[in-house]
Amino acid sequence: MTNFFDGIEPIRYDPSAETDLAYRHYNPDEIVMGKRMEDQLRFAVAYWHSFAWEGGDPFGGRTFDRPWYPQDSMEMARAKADVAFEMFALLGQPFFCFHDADVRPEGASFAESQRNLEEIVDYFGEKMEATGTKLLWGTANMFTHRRFMAGAATNPDPDVFAWSAATVKNCIDATKKLGGQNYVLWGGREGYETLLNTDLVRERQQAGRFLQMVVDYKHKIGFDGAILIEPKPQEPSKHQYDYDVNTVYSFLKEFGLEGEVKMNIEQGHAILAGHSFEHELAMAAAFGILGSIDMNRNDYQSGWDTDQFPNSVPEVALAYYEILKAGGFTTGGTNFDAKLRRQSLDPVDLIAGHVGAMDVCARGLKAAAAMLEDGGLEKARGERYAGWDAPKNRDMLENGTLESITERVLSEGIDPEPRSGRQERLENYINRFV
Ligand code: XLS
Ligand code: NI
Ligand code: NI
Image (cartoon, rainbow, N blue to C red; front, side, top):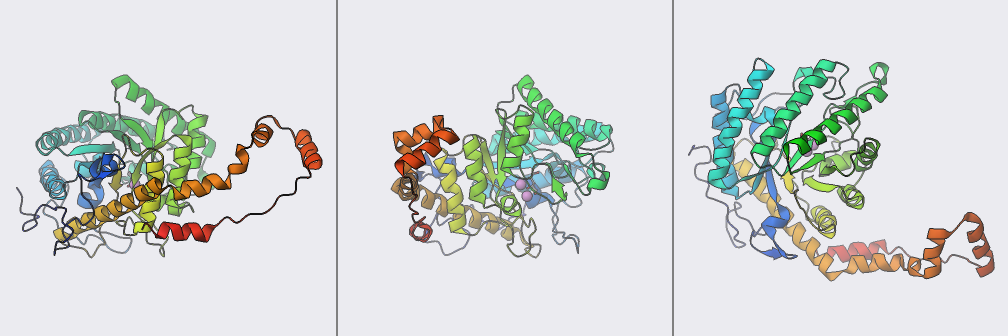
């Protein structure tokens, strides 16, 4: 045991607790729509923000003071892992997620980085065995190091493409070895800053080939988790190729991968793309590619990906509504790709951030389940489209032509009668549950 979280007891479900370090809504064993709440929500801690990020922003460096800094040796990597797994246990967190660069020091060569990763993966394996914590997903950090400044798979330099392919291979191997349930690709720098120096046709081709290789490798080694792409419109690239769910879906179609790859959808990224989170979730569900979520929000005034813990029950409820409606998570879960504010220096802040977020999600999940069970929204939606149930209208959609429909409009004297969309009444309805 380290003494990092000294004085903090394991977090329990206790609605009448006096401390803020208790779950008031997250009750892992409570049944929500036929499943334990823990199995519906499938919470994960993001290793990078909680343990590797040092509190910097564009105007200032490190604010946190952690015993595993500087993060440049295997000894420190193990010290960091010790604390991480203690936090998972305190929270009762079933899952975590990591990038290679979060967990191992960068080596002097590719081979040394690879050895470092293998070593820490073995260390993780022992800890996972001992604590029961599972891996929701693994991923590669192909955006921080300067070699990736012009992209990874989409880099103009074939050597960077090669380095990236080898990196992803190692990270999929690590994920498989740890029983990871998904492998995520977020294309942080798979985009461009200026068209003046960019061949976007070529770069998209490279990204498509790269993803085909990832899928081939997954099948070759028998990794049975899902491959997920995490869309984001910009930041750090000005224009990212994986802008939003719709853009990624057409990319998957173009490269014949739509049956192979699903989405990891992040709340904050959806907003940056000019959508709501529930829009992105519903779109993915419609395409059959809803995989997992990053449940972290942004500051609505700043327009940046500020990665804050969620704290709005109504927003979260609408997201889980779409997820439950689509049948709930299978391999996916709720990852908190969230970091503390840089003034939140204390170990207890790290715990409190997660406790609050889990409670917000639990409340949202319960509200979403109640809305689905009540059926009010689906009933209203059904009524709105009921005209399409009439055989002649179904026939018009399936077999009509512009001429035959014109004929109908004239012969039946069709004259549409506008009807209320009832938005306010539906908003009031939602408010009864959240
Ligand atoms: C950054 C992304 C990143 C991915 C994992 O905006 O959200 O954290 O989730 O690479
Ligand atoms: Ni993000
Ligand atoms: Ni993310």
